[in-house]
Length: 115
Image (cartoon, rainbow, N blue to C red; front, top):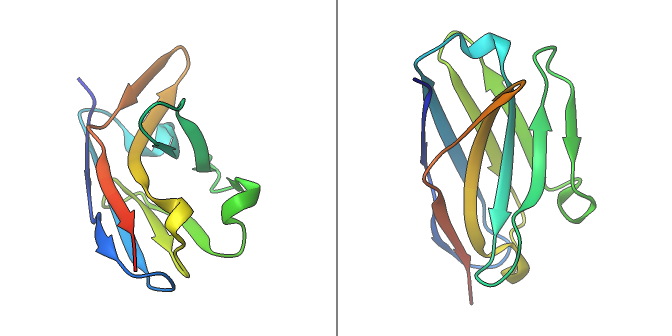
């Protein structure tokens, strides 16, 4: 069974950086499309960034130029480097692994950006 464990969240000031990690286990990581989502309480989950098995990336407009998603297949890990963080980036960040038709989610990690 696929398991995803996120780490790296925390409390930072505006303009600072964080790197989130998502460790994958239970299947062949390189076969999965990977993505980061975020959710603010009371809102629906939104896609932040994704990376295909060919390492093609996409980003939400709100994070383009500030966030970078990457995957390390030998380590079965996907990362989200977040720079120049803003208060509106505050959310719980979730990792998703997808290999149609199945998808798997991590438990989430809190990111809080506050002065």
